[in-house]
Image (cartoon, rainbow, N blue to C red; front, top):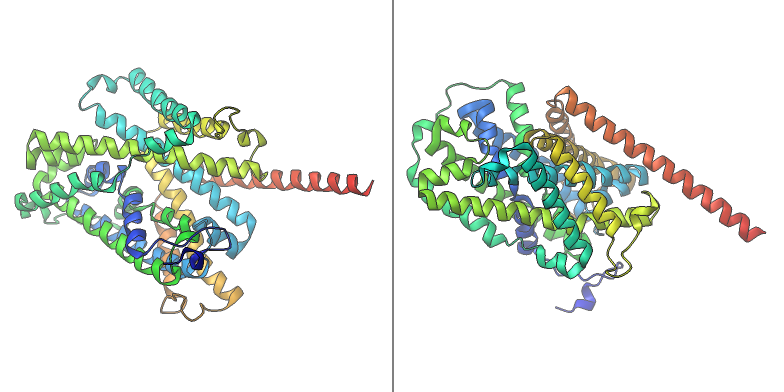
Length: 447
Protein backbone atom coordinates (compact mmCIF):
# COMPACT_ATOMS: atom_id res chain seq x y z
CA UNK A 1 0.00 0.00 0.00
CA UNK A 2 1.34 3.43 -0.86
CA UNK A 3 0.73 5.66 2.15
CA UNK A 4 1.14 8.77 0.02
CA UNK A 5 -1.82 7.71 -2.07
CA UNK A 6 -3.88 7.38 1.10
CA UNK A 7 -2.87 10.71 2.61
CA UNK A 8 -5.72 13.10 3.44
CA UNK A 9 -6.05 16.87 3.47
CA UNK A 10 -5.64 16.67 7.26
CA UNK A 11 -2.14 15.23 6.88
CA UNK A 12 -3.27 11.79 8.07
CA UNK A 13 -2.84 8.40 6.43
CA UNK A 14 -5.77 6.09 5.71
CA UNK A 15 -4.73 2.67 7.01
CA UNK A 16 -7.67 1.34 9.10
CA UNK A 17 -9.55 -1.46 7.34
CA UNK A 18 -12.93 -3.05 8.10
CA UNK A 19 -11.63 -5.71 10.50
CA UNK A 20 -9.47 -3.25 12.42
CA UNK A 21 -12.34 -0.76 12.54
CA UNK A 22 -14.81 -3.43 13.72
CA UNK A 23 -12.37 -4.67 16.38
CA UNK A 24 -11.88 -1.10 17.56
CA UNK A 25 -15.66 -0.78 18.00
CA UNK A 26 -15.76 -3.93 20.14
CA UNK A 27 -12.84 -2.63 22.19
CA UNK A 28 -14.49 0.75 22.74
CA UNK A 29 -17.92 -0.62 23.69
CA UNK A 30 -17.20 -3.71 25.79
CA UNK A 31 -16.28 -2.21 29.14
CA UNK A 32 -17.73 -1.60 32.55
CA UNK A 33 -21.42 -1.79 31.65
CA UNK A 34 -21.68 -5.46 30.80
CA UNK A 35 -19.97 -6.45 34.05
CA UNK A 36 -22.66 -4.71 36.10
CA UNK A 37 -25.87 -4.18 34.13
CA UNK A 38 -27.24 -7.75 33.75
CA UNK A 39 -28.14 -7.79 37.45
CA UNK A 40 -29.65 -4.29 37.40
CA UNK A 41 -31.83 -5.06 34.38
CA UNK A 42 -32.91 -8.39 35.88
CA UNK A 43 -33.89 -6.57 39.08
CA UNK A 44 -36.14 -4.27 37.03
CA UNK A 45 -37.97 -6.69 34.73
CA UNK A 46 -36.95 -10.15 35.94
CA UNK A 47 -36.72 -13.03 33.48
CA UNK A 48 -37.83 -10.71 30.64
CA UNK A 49 -34.50 -8.85 30.83
CA UNK A 50 -33.38 -10.33 27.52
CA UNK A 51 -36.07 -8.18 25.83
CA UNK A 52 -34.20 -5.04 26.91
CA UNK A 53 -31.16 -6.30 24.96
CA UNK A 54 -33.35 -6.71 21.88
CA UNK A 55 -34.70 -3.17 22.26
CA UNK A 56 -31.16 -1.79 22.55
CA UNK A 57 -30.05 -3.84 19.55
CA UNK A 58 -32.88 -2.46 17.39
CA UNK A 59 -32.08 1.11 18.43
CA UNK A 60 -28.35 0.63 17.83
CA UNK A 61 -29.03 -0.93 14.41
CA UNK A 62 -31.24 1.98 13.33
CA UNK A 63 -28.86 4.63 14.65
CA UNK A 64 -25.74 3.10 13.17
CA UNK A 65 -27.35 2.71 9.77
CA UNK A 66 -27.54 6.50 9.98
CA UNK A 67 -23.89 6.62 11.09
CA UNK A 68 -22.98 4.42 8.12
CA UNK A 69 -24.55 6.83 5.62
CA UNK A 70 -23.25 10.02 7.21
CA UNK A 71 -19.83 8.48 7.87
CA UNK A 72 -19.48 7.50 4.22
CA UNK A 73 -20.21 11.12 3.21
CA UNK A 74 -18.19 13.03 5.82
CA UNK A 75 -14.77 11.42 6.02
CA UNK A 76 -12.80 13.93 8.07
CA UNK A 77 -11.86 13.27 11.68
CA UNK A 78 -14.28 14.15 14.46
CA UNK A 79 -16.99 11.49 14.23
CA UNK A 80 -20.36 12.54 15.67
CA UNK A 81 -19.19 16.10 16.27
CA UNK A 82 -18.13 16.51 12.62
CA UNK A 83 -21.35 14.98 11.28
CA UNK A 84 -23.63 17.21 13.34
CA UNK A 85 -21.55 20.33 12.72
CA UNK A 86 -21.53 19.81 8.95
CA UNK A 87 -25.28 19.20 8.96
CA UNK A 88 -26.48 21.90 11.35
CA UNK A 89 -23.63 24.36 11.87
CA UNK A 90 -21.07 25.22 14.59
CA UNK A 91 -23.58 25.84 17.40
CA UNK A 92 -25.06 22.34 17.06
CA UNK A 93 -21.54 20.97 16.73
CA UNK A 94 -20.51 22.62 20.00
CA UNK A 95 -23.57 21.21 21.78
CA UNK A 96 -22.70 17.77 20.44
CA UNK A 97 -19.06 18.03 21.54
CA UNK A 98 -20.17 19.10 25.04
CA UNK A 99 -22.56 16.17 25.27
CA UNK A 100 -19.74 13.87 24.17
CA UNK A 101 -16.97 14.98 26.52
CA UNK A 102 -19.02 16.10 29.53
CA UNK A 103 -22.40 14.38 29.30
CA UNK A 104 -20.99 11.10 28.04
CA UNK A 105 -17.25 10.77 28.82
CA UNK A 106 -17.20 12.42 32.25
CA UNK A 107 -20.41 10.82 33.51
CA UNK A 108 -19.49 7.44 32.04
CA UNK A 109 -16.09 7.57 33.75
CA UNK A 110 -17.75 8.54 37.01
CA UNK A 111 -20.09 5.55 36.67
CA UNK A 112 -17.17 3.26 35.85
CA UNK A 113 -15.23 4.47 38.89
CA UNK A 114 -18.26 3.73 41.10
CA UNK A 115 -18.56 0.26 39.54
CA UNK A 116 -14.85 -0.33 40.12
CA UNK A 117 -15.22 0.56 43.81
CA UNK A 118 -18.22 -1.74 44.11
CA UNK A 119 -16.34 -4.62 42.46
CA UNK A 120 -13.30 -4.17 44.67
CA UNK A 121 -15.51 -4.08 47.75
CA UNK A 122 -16.08 -7.81 47.13
CA UNK A 123 -12.42 -8.32 48.05
CA UNK A 124 -11.94 -5.30 50.33
CA UNK A 125 -15.22 -4.96 52.29
CA UNK A 126 -13.94 -1.79 53.94
CA UNK A 127 -14.62 0.04 50.65
CA UNK A 128 -18.31 -0.11 51.53
CA UNK A 129 -17.59 2.55 54.15
CA UNK A 130 -18.50 5.94 52.61
CA UNK A 131 -15.34 7.74 53.73
CA UNK A 132 -13.02 4.98 52.50
CA UNK A 133 -14.87 4.77 49.19
CA UNK A 134 -14.54 8.55 48.85
CA UNK A 135 -10.82 8.34 49.60
CA UNK A 136 -10.44 5.59 47.01
CA UNK A 137 -12.24 7.60 44.30
CA UNK A 138 -10.24 10.76 44.99
CA UNK A 139 -7.00 8.76 44.97
CA UNK A 140 -7.99 7.00 41.74
CA UNK A 141 -8.74 10.18 39.80
CA UNK A 142 -5.77 11.96 41.39
CA UNK A 143 -3.39 9.17 40.37
CA UNK A 144 -4.68 9.07 36.80
CA UNK A 145 -4.41 12.85 36.51
CA UNK A 146 -0.88 12.89 37.95
CA UNK A 147 0.33 10.20 35.55
CA UNK A 148 -1.06 12.03 32.53
CA UNK A 149 0.29 15.38 33.68
CA UNK A 150 3.72 13.80 34.10
CA UNK A 151 3.91 13.04 30.41
CA UNK A 152 2.20 11.68 27.33
CA UNK A 153 4.38 8.56 27.21
CA UNK A 154 3.42 7.72 30.79
CA UNK A 155 -0.23 8.13 29.90
CA UNK A 156 0.13 5.89 26.86
CA UNK A 157 1.88 3.20 28.92
CA UNK A 158 -0.94 3.36 31.44
CA UNK A 159 -3.51 2.97 28.67
CA UNK A 160 -3.22 -0.83 28.64
CA UNK A 161 -6.67 -1.83 27.48
CA UNK A 162 -5.98 -5.05 25.65
CA UNK A 163 -8.93 -6.41 23.69
CA UNK A 164 -7.85 -10.01 24.13
CA UNK A 165 -7.27 -9.60 27.85
CA UNK A 166 -10.68 -7.99 28.24
CA UNK A 167 -12.62 -10.50 26.19
CA UNK A 168 -10.90 -13.75 27.20
CA UNK A 169 -12.60 -14.14 30.62
CA UNK A 170 -15.98 -13.25 29.10
CA UNK A 171 -15.63 -15.71 26.24
CA UNK A 172 -14.49 -18.41 28.67
CA UNK A 173 -17.58 -17.78 30.80
CA UNK A 174 -19.84 -18.07 27.76
CA UNK A 175 -18.13 -21.19 26.44
CA UNK A 176 -18.36 -23.09 29.73
CA UNK A 177 -21.60 -21.51 30.98
CA UNK A 178 -23.67 -22.62 27.98
CA UNK A 179 -23.44 -26.18 29.30
CA UNK A 180 -24.66 -25.17 32.77
CA UNK A 181 -27.86 -23.38 31.74
CA UNK A 182 -31.17 -24.37 33.29
CA UNK A 183 -33.58 -23.47 30.49
CA UNK A 184 -36.46 -23.14 32.96
CA UNK A 185 -34.79 -19.91 34.13
CA UNK A 186 -35.12 -18.46 30.62
CA UNK A 187 -38.90 -18.79 30.39
CA UNK A 188 -40.66 -15.41 30.45
CA UNK A 189 -43.58 -15.68 32.84
CA UNK A 190 -44.24 -12.00 33.59
CA UNK A 191 -44.11 -9.74 30.52
CA UNK A 192 -43.18 -6.10 31.28
CA UNK A 193 -45.18 -3.12 30.08
CA UNK A 194 -43.75 -0.67 27.55
CA UNK A 195 -42.74 1.77 30.29
CA UNK A 196 -40.95 -0.87 32.35
CA UNK A 197 -39.18 -2.22 29.29
CA UNK A 198 -38.15 1.26 28.18
CA UNK A 199 -36.77 2.18 31.60
CA UNK A 200 -34.75 -1.04 31.72
CA UNK A 201 -33.47 -0.51 28.17
CA UNK A 202 -32.42 3.06 29.04
CA UNK A 203 -30.18 1.76 31.83
CA UNK A 204 -28.84 -1.07 29.70
CA UNK A 205 -28.05 1.25 26.80
CA UNK A 206 -24.99 2.38 28.75
CA UNK A 207 -23.39 -0.96 27.83
CA UNK A 208 -24.13 -0.51 24.10
CA UNK A 209 -22.87 3.05 23.67
CA UNK A 210 -19.36 4.00 22.63
CA UNK A 211 -19.12 2.60 19.09
CA UNK A 212 -19.28 6.14 17.72
CA UNK A 213 -15.87 6.85 19.31
CA UNK A 214 -14.21 4.64 16.70
CA UNK A 215 -15.51 7.08 14.06
CA UNK A 216 -13.33 9.84 15.51
CA UNK A 217 -10.55 8.37 13.36
CA UNK A 218 -12.55 9.07 10.19
CA UNK A 219 -9.53 10.77 8.60
CA UNK A 220 -7.50 7.55 8.95
CA UNK A 221 -10.05 4.95 7.77
CA UNK A 222 -9.14 3.24 4.51
CA UNK A 223 -11.85 3.56 1.83
CA UNK A 224 -14.39 4.90 4.38
CA UNK A 225 -17.34 4.64 1.98
CA UNK A 226 -17.03 0.84 2.19
CA UNK A 227 -15.11 0.30 5.42
CA UNK A 228 -17.42 2.22 7.76
CA UNK A 229 -20.63 0.31 6.90
CA UNK A 230 -18.82 -3.06 6.98
CA UNK A 231 -16.93 -2.29 10.18
CA UNK A 232 -20.08 -1.12 11.92
CA UNK A 233 -21.87 -4.33 10.95
CA UNK A 234 -19.00 -6.50 12.20
CA UNK A 235 -18.52 -4.59 15.44
CA UNK A 236 -22.14 -4.09 16.48
CA UNK A 237 -23.06 -7.65 15.46
CA UNK A 238 -20.23 -9.08 17.54
CA UNK A 239 -21.18 -6.98 20.57
CA UNK A 240 -24.84 -8.01 20.42
CA UNK A 241 -23.91 -11.70 20.16
CA UNK A 242 -21.53 -11.43 23.12
CA UNK A 243 -23.96 -9.51 25.32
CA UNK A 244 -26.92 -11.80 24.66
CA UNK A 245 -24.73 -14.85 25.27
CA UNK A 246 -23.45 -13.44 28.56
CA UNK A 247 -26.91 -12.55 29.83
CA UNK A 248 -28.32 -15.91 28.74
CA UNK A 249 -25.58 -17.69 30.70
CA UNK A 250 -26.06 -15.42 33.74
CA UNK A 251 -29.84 -15.79 33.82
CA UNK A 252 -29.77 -19.46 32.87
CA UNK A 253 -27.41 -20.37 35.69
CA UNK A 254 -28.43 -17.97 38.47
CA UNK A 255 -32.14 -17.68 37.73
CA UNK A 256 -33.98 -15.30 40.10
CA UNK A 257 -30.74 -14.86 42.07
CA UNK A 258 -29.38 -12.74 39.19
CA UNK A 259 -31.55 -9.84 40.38
CA UNK A 260 -29.83 -10.02 43.77
CA UNK A 261 -26.35 -9.70 42.22
CA UNK A 262 -26.60 -6.11 41.02
CA UNK A 263 -23.05 -5.13 42.04
CA UNK A 264 -21.17 -7.92 40.22
CA UNK A 265 -23.56 -10.28 38.39
CA UNK A 266 -20.97 -11.81 36.06
CA UNK A 267 -18.65 -12.51 38.97
CA UNK A 268 -21.52 -14.32 40.70
CA UNK A 269 -22.17 -16.24 37.46
CA UNK A 270 -18.52 -17.22 37.16
CA UNK A 271 -18.53 -18.40 40.78
CA UNK A 272 -21.50 -20.62 39.95
CA UNK A 273 -20.13 -21.96 36.65
CA UNK A 274 -16.36 -22.03 37.15
CA UNK A 275 -15.98 -22.02 40.93
CA UNK A 276 -14.20 -19.42 43.05
CA UNK A 277 -11.22 -19.21 40.69
CA UNK A 278 -13.61 -18.26 37.87
CA UNK A 279 -15.17 -15.53 39.98
CA UNK A 280 -11.73 -14.17 40.80
CA UNK A 281 -10.79 -14.26 37.10
CA UNK A 282 -13.92 -12.27 36.16
CA UNK A 283 -13.30 -9.83 38.99
CA UNK A 284 -9.73 -9.25 37.81
CA UNK A 285 -10.97 -8.85 34.24
CA UNK A 286 -13.63 -6.36 35.35
CA UNK A 287 -11.17 -4.25 37.36
CA UNK A 288 -8.68 -4.24 34.47
CA UNK A 289 -11.45 -3.21 32.11
CA UNK A 290 -12.63 -0.45 34.44
CA UNK A 291 -9.12 0.88 35.00
CA UNK A 292 -8.18 0.61 31.34
CA UNK A 293 -11.24 2.59 30.25
CA UNK A 294 -10.61 5.28 32.84
CA UNK A 295 -6.93 5.62 31.95
CA UNK A 296 -7.72 5.76 28.25
CA UNK A 297 -10.32 8.49 28.72
CA UNK A 298 -7.98 10.40 31.02
CA UNK A 299 -5.41 10.34 28.22
CA UNK A 300 -7.72 11.29 25.35
CA UNK A 301 -10.65 13.41 26.53
CA UNK A 302 -8.72 16.25 28.24
CA UNK A 303 -7.08 16.91 24.85
CA UNK A 304 -10.55 17.68 23.49
CA UNK A 305 -11.12 20.15 26.33
CA UNK A 306 -7.67 21.66 25.72
CA UNK A 307 -8.35 22.09 21.99
CA UNK A 308 -11.76 23.68 22.63
CA UNK A 309 -10.22 26.13 25.10
CA UNK A 310 -7.41 26.93 22.67
CA UNK A 311 -10.03 27.72 20.01
CA UNK A 312 -11.88 30.02 22.41
CA UNK A 313 -14.89 27.77 22.94
CA UNK A 314 -14.05 27.09 26.61
CA UNK A 315 -12.35 29.27 29.26
CA UNK A 316 -8.76 30.10 28.31
CA UNK A 317 -7.13 28.72 31.47
CA UNK A 318 -8.01 25.20 30.30
CA UNK A 319 -5.53 25.65 27.43
CA UNK A 320 -2.53 26.00 29.75
CA UNK A 321 0.31 23.51 29.34
CA UNK A 322 2.90 22.32 31.83
CA UNK A 323 6.19 24.21 31.41
CA UNK A 324 8.28 21.08 32.02
CA UNK A 325 6.20 18.15 30.82
CA UNK A 326 4.37 20.02 28.02
CA UNK A 327 1.03 18.39 28.82
CA UNK A 328 -2.39 20.10 29.07
CA UNK A 329 -2.31 19.95 32.86
CA UNK A 330 -5.20 22.36 33.44
CA UNK A 331 -7.56 20.37 31.21
CA UNK A 332 -6.43 17.09 32.82
CA UNK A 333 -6.96 18.43 36.34
CA UNK A 334 -10.34 19.88 35.38
CA UNK A 335 -11.50 16.63 33.78
CA UNK A 336 -10.35 14.56 36.77
CA UNK A 337 -11.99 16.92 39.27
CA UNK A 338 -15.35 16.95 37.46
CA UNK A 339 -15.32 13.17 37.01
CA UNK A 340 -14.40 12.59 40.65
CA UNK A 341 -17.10 15.00 41.80
CA UNK A 342 -19.78 13.11 39.90
CA UNK A 343 -18.47 9.77 41.14
CA UNK A 344 -18.64 10.97 44.75
CA UNK A 345 -22.18 12.29 44.35
CA UNK A 346 -23.94 9.51 42.41
CA UNK A 347 -24.52 5.80 42.11
CA UNK A 348 -23.66 3.71 39.07
CA UNK A 349 -27.26 3.43 37.90
CA UNK A 350 -27.98 7.18 38.13
CA UNK A 351 -24.74 8.12 36.39
CA UNK A 352 -25.28 5.47 33.71
CA UNK A 353 -28.74 6.84 32.91
CA UNK A 354 -27.44 10.41 32.63
CA UNK A 355 -24.55 9.28 30.43
CA UNK A 356 -26.95 7.26 28.27
CA UNK A 357 -29.24 10.29 27.97
CA UNK A 358 -26.36 12.43 26.72
CA UNK A 359 -25.18 9.97 24.10
CA UNK A 360 -28.76 9.34 22.98
CA UNK A 361 -29.12 13.06 22.26
CA UNK A 362 -26.02 12.83 20.08
CA UNK A 363 -27.51 9.79 18.33
CA UNK A 364 -30.69 11.80 17.74
CA UNK A 365 -28.59 14.51 16.11
CA UNK A 366 -26.91 11.99 13.80
CA UNK A 367 -30.28 10.50 12.74
CA UNK A 368 -31.54 13.97 11.87
CA UNK A 369 -28.21 14.80 10.18
CA UNK A 370 -28.98 12.15 7.55
CA UNK A 371 -32.09 14.07 6.51
CA UNK A 372 -30.41 17.47 6.73
CA UNK A 373 -27.43 16.44 4.60
CA UNK A 374 -29.76 14.98 1.96
CA UNK A 375 -31.68 18.27 1.97
CA UNK A 376 -28.54 20.42 1.68
CA UNK A 377 -26.39 18.36 -0.66
CA UNK A 378 -28.74 15.86 -2.25
CA UNK A 379 -28.67 12.07 -1.89
CA UNK A 380 -25.39 10.18 -1.33
CA UNK A 381 -23.20 10.00 -4.41
CA UNK A 382 -22.34 6.80 -6.25
CA UNK A 383 -20.07 4.69 -4.07
CA UNK A 384 -21.35 6.23 -0.83
CA UNK A 385 -23.57 4.18 1.46
CA UNK A 386 -27.27 5.03 1.28
CA UNK A 387 -29.88 3.75 3.71
CA UNK A 388 -32.71 2.05 1.80
CA UNK A 389 -36.27 3.18 2.33
CA UNK A 390 -35.84 6.92 1.94
CA UNK A 391 -36.46 8.79 5.20
CA UNK A 392 -37.98 5.78 6.98
CA UNK A 393 -34.93 4.55 8.91
CA UNK A 394 -33.68 7.94 10.17
CA UNK A 395 -37.20 8.96 11.20
CA UNK A 396 -37.87 5.68 13.01
CA UNK A 397 -34.40 5.87 14.56
CA UNK A 398 -35.07 9.40 15.81
CA UNK A 399 -38.49 8.32 17.08
CA UNK A 400 -37.23 5.37 19.13
CA UNK A 401 -34.40 7.48 20.56
CA UNK A 402 -36.95 10.08 21.68
CA UNK A 403 -39.08 7.28 23.16
CA UNK A 404 -36.12 5.94 25.12
CA UNK A 405 -35.23 9.44 26.34
CA UNK A 406 -38.83 9.86 27.52
CA UNK A 407 -38.23 7.04 30.01
CA UNK A 408 -35.89 9.23 32.05
CA UNK A 409 -37.11 10.25 35.46
CA UNK A 410 -37.90 13.92 36.08
CA UNK A 411 -34.68 14.67 37.97
CA UNK A 412 -32.53 13.05 35.30
CA UNK A 413 -34.32 14.93 32.52
CA UNK A 414 -33.81 18.22 34.38
CA UNK A 415 -30.08 17.47 34.75
CA UNK A 416 -29.71 16.89 30.99
CA UNK A 417 -31.69 20.08 30.26
CA UNK A 418 -29.39 22.09 32.55
CA UNK A 419 -26.35 20.66 30.74
CA UNK A 420 -27.78 21.74 27.39
CA UNK A 421 -28.57 25.22 28.74
CA UNK A 422 -25.05 25.67 30.15
CA UNK A 423 -23.53 24.52 26.86
CA UNK A 424 -25.63 27.06 24.95
CA UNK A 425 -24.60 29.86 27.34
CA UNK A 426 -20.93 28.87 27.05
CA UNK A 427 -21.07 28.94 23.26
CA UNK A 428 -22.85 32.30 23.22
CA UNK A 429 -20.35 33.90 25.60
CA UNK A 430 -17.46 32.45 23.61
CA UNK A 431 -18.89 33.85 20.38
CA UNK A 432 -19.28 37.31 21.95
CA UNK A 433 -15.70 37.26 23.24
CA UNK A 434 -14.35 36.20 19.84
CA UNK A 435 -16.29 38.99 18.11
CA UNK A 436 -14.99 41.53 20.61
CA UNK A 437 -11.40 40.41 20.08
CA UNK A 438 -11.84 40.47 16.32
CA UNK A 439 -13.26 43.99 16.47
CA UNK A 440 -10.35 45.20 18.62
CA UNK A 441 -7.85 43.58 16.29
CA UNK A 442 -9.51 45.21 13.28
CA UNK A 443 -9.50 48.60 15.03
CA UNK A 444 -5.80 48.20 15.88
CA UNK A 445 -4.92 47.38 12.27
CA UNK A 446 -7.00 50.31 11.04
CA UNK A 447 -5.26 52.65 13.48
